[in-house]
Image (cartoon, rainbow, N blue to C red; front, side, top):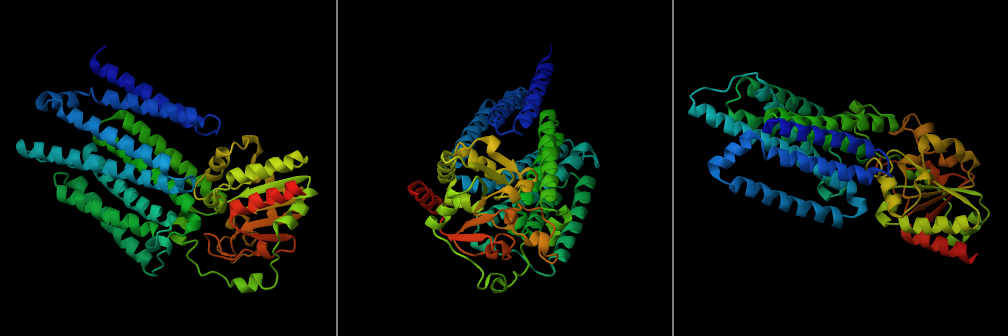
Length: 478
């Protein structure tokens, strides 16, 4: 076989590994193996790319320095990535994912920009402008636009999830839709300009700049409650940018990998929207979490019942079935191991313990699953919302740790609520509800929760980890 045939075969193997990796990563038991296969596929694809004829011509003309620089960049990038992954806490994984999505978009934009620069330089030497409306011109323009929107949108998402002061408050300018419309029209005109005149590097970078601003203004108005959906969407954007970059450099494996990421991101976005009973248009333009909160005094005044660890332990002593509902507060408190100890103490008494997982609990899809798996909690005890909701009326005690909006009954009872119609965990139907929170502060949606004032609810005000450890101690003493 020719060298190109071997390269294509390597790309095919890498693509197959990517597909198998995606399949394996759909289940917690096989996700680690899926990650390894995906990494192996990427390593094969990178190695095969080094033998591309264009790369070999460059090496023949300039020596081995370009390859040395690529290897050096790979080592530095791997070191930075590994350090971030190891040192960043589990609570910061959503931010980490948002940041990595952005880096993917930025890399695609830079690849397109570099290819355009080389192509225009070659065209100038040949005194022949680049032809308009070709695959190269269209793919370059799309890569620059999608990559810029992804990068800057992801940076804003990172700032929101990290709760940086300048990003904590959503952008609620009443003219924001008109601003976005103007920027959108500007990007379309520049997109047309790059496709019609691909020899102009100035038009390309103007498109990138306007796309960057659009990425910021599209993400800034989105409230915290919608951030899981936004992360999925930005993940899809990064894949689409990579696929478009594959057409720019005629690399089939990049097209396949980017298409897989783009398609999976869109599917996950649709699943998240369904889980929140929200349309994608509503997420992007509705501003959930940007509305003014209802008066909490009207909801809580004189109705909230606080309890101590000893009082709650007495309730748990007579419980046959307990359901634990984890939320972002559990992740912040790093209480997953304490929760496992509480579950062990309950199970020693013959109590059945399960965990109710809402699709958008935490700040990204699967956040709670990963967090509880870190504490070696058996996967079979993690039950999805549709599966566990019918069992809450037969549940003796539901313990809510750091969750808020996903257990807010206003989604069912108040048609004027910002979360009206959003599927929630029906914990209010349990015989007794114990809510562990630091205070009565609202969740991402910025609204009070009537559950906290319900007749069957006991509030336990404390840090999540300390509260669960004290509760376990009280239970064991009893």
